[in-house]
Length: 338
Image (cartoon, rainbow, N blue to C red; front, side, top):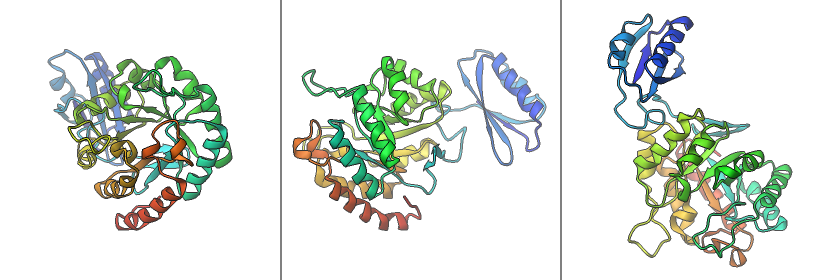
């Protein structure tokens, strides 16, 4: 439910309402606005008379039940879009962020060459897998902590923030030590123990949509993270599995404006996994921007032909630079900038 406080409600009145919410078995999530405070009551409380009691509390203007199952990520409680701040990097608002790098960290030379190139082109975050969940147990699984150390070296040289996947709560401490953004991959979108674990951190999270997951399921997974106290979540549309075989996945471009309608969280698009085809990344990236995405996460490799994974969907550094230059015109039309 949403408790809207009167414009001049006092701090004591707000604290009193939060205390009453907790008495009824809910968690209180106050949002302090310029004109008034709104308090979200979320949980599985069982009290039946809470609405009348809260309506009678001093300073309360109205009490409205939340209709959608995703309480914290939805627009009912928080009307305006969230803007995430990752040190000096802003995600959301009029900012458009680029995350780029290889699917897997393979060597020191590979990650440093890529980091320098994507930084020069306009990226602000370096993506790269150190722990890789793969369909086949015989495929390359990543360099693990050694890969994280190489990404940290690239960050030290270029200033790029690190976006990397965590596949198990067992590795949370080590990955969080190196990473600036924790990525939850498509295969782990409904790993609820992992979602709770990253929710207990304050690290920003990039939550990818599962390959066979609905929009509602994506938002409910984000709800797990926010319910544990971490509001710093970005949603990522990376394509879903359909009957189409010409592309690796089917990028659901309509998910971008729909997520913007349903949720206040920033939306990132992954055109690399969304198509699986290098030649489609540039047009799909433009479509994502026009549809309202807050950023892109793109695979870039200095030698895709010899990549350990995802070579066919990785751009060469010069191709990524050309894409960024093309995006500038679209950004101007949308009154946004890198």
